[in-house]
Amino acid sequence: MPAPVETPERNPAARRQHFRRVAIAAALGFSAFMALLLVVDLGYIGEFLLNASPDRYRRFRENIFVAETLHEVILSLGSATVTTALALLVAVPAGYALSRFRIRGKLLVDTLVDSAIVLPPLIMGLSLLVLLSVLRRAGEALGTPPDPAAGVPGRPNPVLNSFYEFFVYAKPGIVLAQFSVATALAVRSMKAAFDAADRRVEDVALTLGCTRFGAFWRAALPQARSGLLTGAVVAWSYTVGLFAPVAILAGTVKGRTAVLPTRAYMEVSNGYLEEALALTLVMAVIAMTVLIALKLLARRNAAGAEVSL
Amino acid sequence: MPKSARLSAGAAVCAALFLAAAGCGGDGPPAAGGGAKGPGGGLSGRIFVYCAAGVKEPVSALAESFKKETGVEVELTFANSGQLLGQAEMTRTGDVYIPGDTGFIDQARTKGLVAGEPRDFCWFVPTILVQKGNPKGIKGLGDLSAPGMRLALADDTAAIGKLQTRIFAKNALDVTAIKKNVVASPATVTDTALTVKMKTADAAIVWDSTAAMFAGDAGIVRIPVEKNVIGIVASAVLASSRNRPAAEAFADYLASARGREVLRAKGFTVEAPK
Image 1 (cartoon, rainbow over the protein chains, first blue to last red):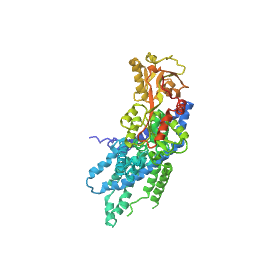
Image 2 (cartoon, each protein chain N blue to C red):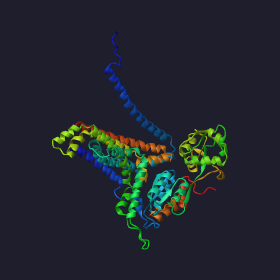
Image 3 (tube, chains in turn cyan, orange):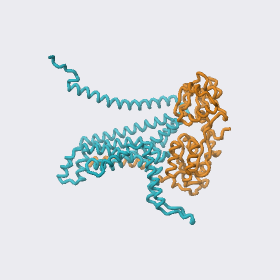
Image 4 (tube, helix red, strand yellow):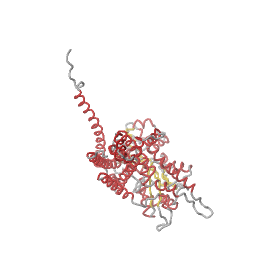
């Protein structure tokens, strides 16, 4: 019988190498695809700027290089950051609870969290609008009724009414719309992170006299650090480009509630594709810079981090 | 812990940026603007206007000049006409509704959202856009079905696309022959006009205001009114308005001589075509 031939398929070391190349090709392939999209957009705008008539160019300039664009960039980044912070504030304990504790009807609780991701974003915004409108109507029903004889208008219940006044067509509405979707995504990644963390470390901590909170804070959370980063990255990047629920709940008022994605959409619906693409590219560059900074910060933290009891 | 200190410093910077953008205060809901009388024509406060994305350009220009003249802050929120109707119905908030088509105002009226009569202020007149100097000698709708004519007709989902179909039916044109000549069906009226400018099409049907935008690079062949189907843009004051005097004034302003000047300068048709 001849000796088996050493083909790459049979040689485990070579097979590992082979798989390594395939895996890296997949990662590089998809990121190259995204880079291609951005470069093609850039080329499209470049070609447009070279060929644009003076009038058309003026319209582009007057809609891109203005204070409102800066306002929209800041509002987009700011609202996404506030939203992410709020989402993590809820998602860290919620993800921990879903991962560790026995909760009655946990399957239902867990699935209700998912429903925020399943619902189309526009419907999510509409549902929030419905909720706030119902609250206001309840406020009107519970408030002082109008007195037509004395000409005194009715006064709604101030507490119920204030929700509506605070969120609808106002900046807090942007955060509320974003928060409703982003929190679900953050809870998912926090639960996965706590599921992957080693419970025994917590058990040891408890045995050594830690409180339940102490075990969470000093044993579970440090292990879930990468999940925290994932949650933050997913929530932030999803939020920063969110359009539909923001537009319906907060409106798209220039200089007040317009964020970059809503502006870009308006430009598309008016036939100004170049303005929309330019705004989107600005957003992409800024968002990628923020994400890179976040990842570098996390990497530096991870280098010096050990579970400390 | 230095790590959390760094993180909270970052969070503080972000929060500060957000507050800066939020403009700290003065951010109450639009309806709280109130209708108190003030200097400058006796109007003040602000009004919240639902404006169809398709008429964003002229209405934005008019909102600015209205503010200069009266001091009333006009907040425009843009979306498609249907979503705006939904928002107005759900929130029972807002002062003026300006959809892209008057059909939506009728719908709003049946829902009891409209106060008073809507005011027409702008007419979207379909026009034939031809290449500069009209090298193909196009005189009217009848030439669109001529063999070898390269046409750009906007997609049916665009407002102009819906009207052009009605124009063909109204004039009993040979739709099969016209469809054969179509070389592009862009999604927006602006892109449709662009094909003629770029000379990839010989003719296109666009709004008169779009044609005006391309006046330097293309020629215009008008469609006689009796053969045309014209789109009307109107504004309606909403029953929910809490600043009724300012809302009425803005609706009037859109249709006023002053408003017409602004619209005309942008190439819009401001008198009902006869």
